[in-house]
Image 1 (cartoon, rainbow, N blue to C red):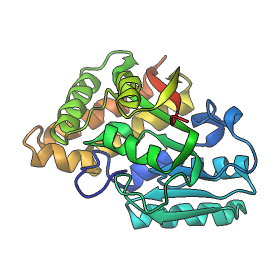
Image 2: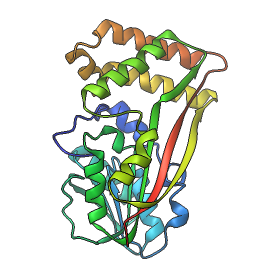
Image 3: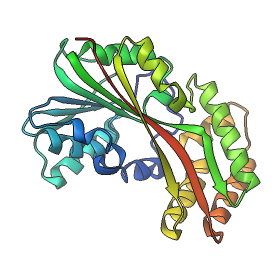
Image 4: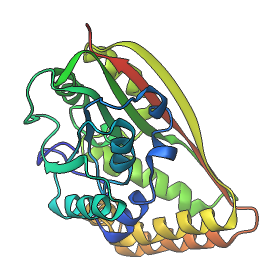
Length: 271
């Protein structure tokens, strides 16, 4: 994430961090792994609970991987995950992507998963990331595009959730339809050799739809999204409860399916 000037729409309620902890390098950074090699020093921006970072660290060992975030609690979770996984070439530090505490040209690779969509100044962040990359160094970013989110069966509550999420993110100065903007942000930051690698996230089996639906039901009433929606006057607590009930009903529906697009991109700092 960025720093105190950014308002993180999701926040760090247990329902959010728990969902983020399901992410892995093998799944969520699959587009990047083939480009990594032992000896590459790697920076993971907005590392959260570190489950992706640890997988990336294994790919570049024995070189160092560093994960950064701005919340001490999730950094503690990341350190514990690395310890449990037995991965010793990774460390986690509190830092802002707008002011990285690292020397120019000190990394070979920088990675950010689902980060740009939450920043008020994504291009400035990418310029700062570029600064700490060696000439020709690799940037890997991946963001969802919320406008592509589709549920079946259709539930009015989920449609209302999606509209509300867009309004809260916009109020926070962020763009949750970031996937479509990744290419232009990278270009505006001066990065070159941009390669786009879109994928579709799909939840269609009972286990995955139950997890996704019940997670959002929890998040829409208990996370920072709920607090922000109410404080901004965009929804009432009763309206949020109704949206949560809709998510739970969708998760129980026969043939439930949810899908959306991620846009991943690889780019390089100019040599």
